[in-house]
Length: 73
Image 1 (cartoon, one colour):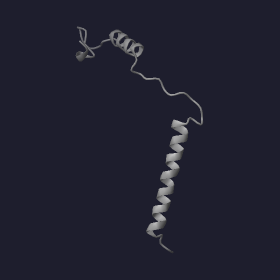
Image 2: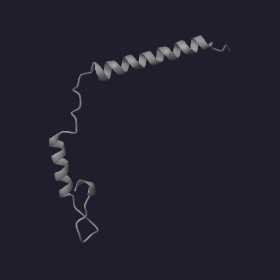
Image 3: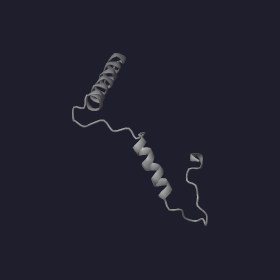
Image 4: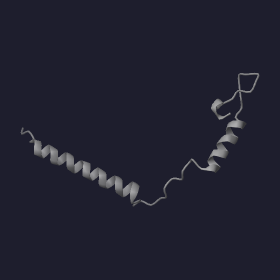
């Protein structure tokens, strides 16, 4: 059995890193499989819907209303 030299290991590692980088770019940046970027969740519409949902959330285990986000007030 022969052992690999440092140069062989380094070149194989560099090749794998390069292949991973090219694959990442092709799939996520160039969108070779199609698709649109995900919309940002920090929009005014999203914020309003979240606040409405938090206010409508059923409170259990307390006779008084429980504030789910005390920092919001």
